[in-house]
Image (cartoon, rainbow, N blue to C red; front, side, top):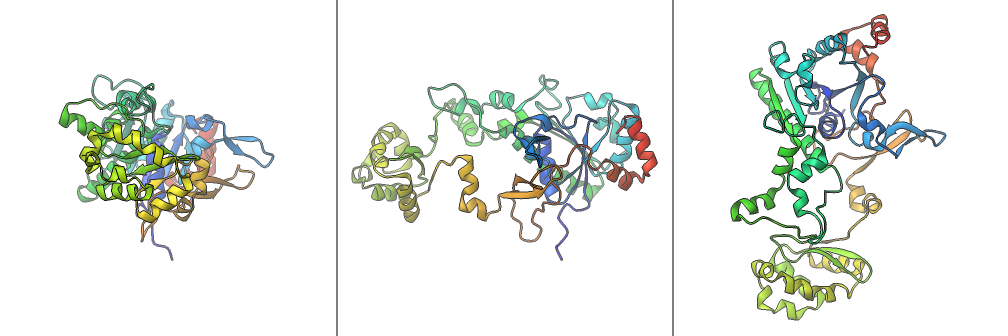
Length: 407
């Protein structure tokens, strides 16, 4: 008999859409939380229409379920509520009373206008953990601005250190500010639940894309704070480690990530680069950083003498960190990725094959591993079920709500 999941018994009223909030609630759902995804009737999460690609039905035609939506919405139950109506707000409050967490990513002040802001709810529901996810936070001069991942990447500095030194500023290839905000929000929610369990006190969590983006400047941000020197784009080079970059081989590319002096000497031995091994300018990492241009001018001749496969085999044997540069097809074909269960399939009612492929949860837990219980739901799939379960409404009462356009 499997053990209960760690978040079993926690119910989340999920008023988020797009990527940051849904990433947070998918992670919590994977760990056992009952996530009730609240969507606008007839429209739903914006990302449902962010395609192609879409899930194909039995005839090979596109359904209304986009791959983008699928990426962050498993282990949730979808209900529809029209929060623009007083009846919808009243229904939402009845459901919030049955929940431990409310998470939302509305524009600052929008829910307060509906009577669903934190200040509106905290007296009635003092143990509620209320998490807001916005572009710029609840305070400050930018608080009321609409926020997007791309804007956060630009404003938060990551684009100034990403890309080729002589190229235009470059964003990260996925919505990483969104994803990381969802990760930080999930951690904050778990901490707030721990506090609530100890004290009975809920709280308001204020997370945003810009704060998150600034926080994960990490070493480059701290390099600036310590030195006063503004970091610049280094392409695939590392500001603090040399050699650490992509090199062309005889038939492609390989990443070489030399993290210490021993690994550099081992690379020199594998490459037959006795001249570089004995050069005092390259004896230590600080010296290699100071002389990076001369070293990087000398290394290509050695790297291009062998194929990518040869380098991967030779350097793996020598325990010098290296990697291919995989495209996304190659990622999911990789034996290590497959061994770690990072590609999964889940049953889906609209998929012609009966299943949809998804990316697995990266958490590996010995006692309570994540479980894949429910595929990303179709719009309103669980409305009747949830209303009957939480509020004990019968079929006639639910039908009346539907006739009124409330759900």
